Length: 215
Image (cartoon, rainbow, N blue to C red; front, side, top):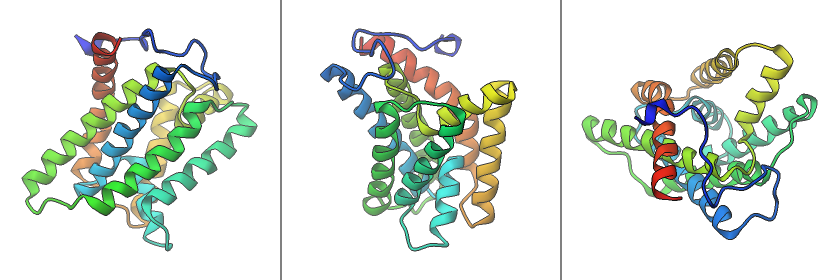
């Protein structure tokens, strides 16, 4: 049912335009809630020690070679990606900026306060839960309609100048960053595969739940 969703739903708290810097309180609340859930899921996936999402693998790999936390590196990667927006003529919204800040903070929160389960089965369960959280958080974030995340904006900008299919552009980005992250020492494993194959359906689930519950 939810897998058939083809567009992002609009609910009564969705922003009418993505570049609205004075949204309703409800829009701002759900934006932050969605991003916190998204960041929590990303952090828990790292904590599960079964692998991480491609961009987190990159952040993890870089953090192993410099004296900065994974969350800090995640934020700096977002800033670097936003700089790449300039020649691509992409414009950030409130959601774009908060995406970079909140997700980075939540990742560091998880790594600092949540221990890795000692049993592999529990690690795997935590990885599955984390991917679902990222998907639902992403669904809430997208419905708020306050600007794309840094990586989504990069994908959109590259698609426009290359005229390649969105799927091809996204695949190129994800494969590139996970390869670099793995080379630098980032953890790639079953959790990475769970994220790669599960994030699409989980975001669709998130969009469905928002449309049915949070309207």
